[in-house]
Length: 307
Image (tube, rainbow, N blue to C red; front, side, top):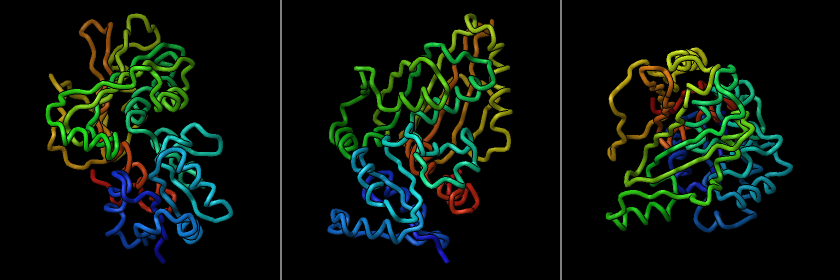
């Protein structure tokens, strides 16, 4: 018997991509609401109580309301909003970092933010290993395709082809910072500088490291090998050993659920750049939700993913 899945917010960018991934799979039966039902609290509540799993693709406040609607049901929830990423009782949906078994058994899973996925993937294993300090004021620079901003930002970029670059969160209060700090075990919030370029999808996240002032870090190669060991055997995360002269984001990027990690270092070993490349709508959003759903449903972790 297929697992019944209700996607609350299935008309948004993330929700549409999840539907596209799940619709062809016989393991799942999608519970879809029409335009009128989507705005009807009674219809949504009924869907939560019929479903085995629900994926919330909603703004934060609406996600909290949805969880309240599901109260008293047996539905297991994946929340793709920011609302529960550092909330007690929620398991963070990053299997490679948080543990697959924890997600497989969870009743409530919070889907990671797209930028956070790159930052945490690079930093958390190295902080845990004691190679990088937990009390350092890290900087994170990142650039994303405009689809991460939802319908309004998509329309803005597509209606105004003259936009070449957009940097934002200039008040230094981006909503991903709490999970970046918490999931890496940092005592100091990272200084996060996100930007957007005129590409629909794709993302590069970077953490620069002044290794000369981090005596426990060792060389850039030591850091890379630590990441290789941590992610050994993963079909989704690849730690590359080559050192290309450049990394490109292309407007023609196809959907991908991969996460590619790189460590670049100065020849004298005094500096390094940790770099993550991913699809902000793949491993950064819908792909991550499907990965967690697979684990929660007892299925192959990478089923339905684009690798």
